[in-house]
Amino acid sequence: MVGAQDLQQWLQTDSAELAPIRASWSDLPPDNFLRDGGHYRFRRHSSFIVDTAPGIITQTPHRPHWQPVTYNALHGGIERHFEPVRPEVSQHPLWLRLITQLGQLLAQSKPTARWYVEAHQFRVDTTGGIGRPTPEGAHRDGVDFVAVIMLGRHQIKGGETRVFEADGPSGVRFTLQEPWSVLLLDDERVIHESTPIQPQDGHGWRDTLVLTFRSSGFQDPVRAA
View 1 (tube, rainbow, N blue to C red):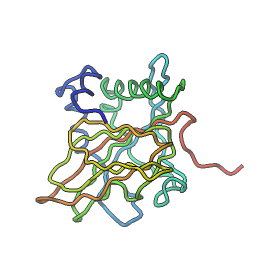
View 2: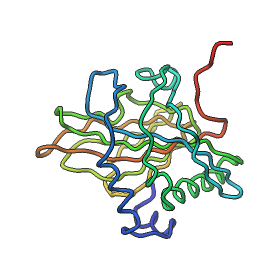
View 3: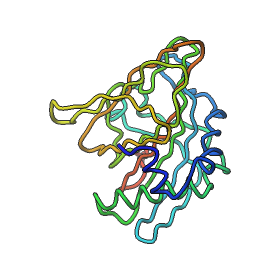
View 4: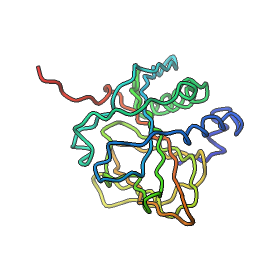
């Protein structure tokens, strides 16, 4: 896990440059694909390609998010069409720098010339009394790496992150608290989940940015011939 101060130094940025990106979490449309009947999640989604050696990032034409049921038993097998990340965010120099530098860093662990990256802005709130950051439960995402970036918590309790070996008994539990702290996960080796959140006093929420990095292309449904 990387703390906020280390992340800012690594990106050569400060809180003033981060502020306009952070503000965009207050303008996320509802997630209309929740199969548990909930109305607690809001999100935007966009996709990017990072060529690691030259450090070039390109946003792809807008595309749906798809996962096989192997990795997401609750929401897998369907194309989920979410509103894209707003252009003033997705083309912000800091946003592009964040994704590109993470891609180059992860390529040091698993060498690849190109990453296929999906970016998810999430807000999970407690309007209905409880919010579920991972309604699918403990899972893998079917990618190479996952970066979970905490943007903020407001008047909530819960939301504990749990990371366990995919093929073993060991695991850790902790709660991401600090805005702009980052958790990096090797998706081939671990499963992860976050526990539900509840309000402490009135309306609360939990904001995160989730970036997934996959070297073998985007996950897409198999089309019939």
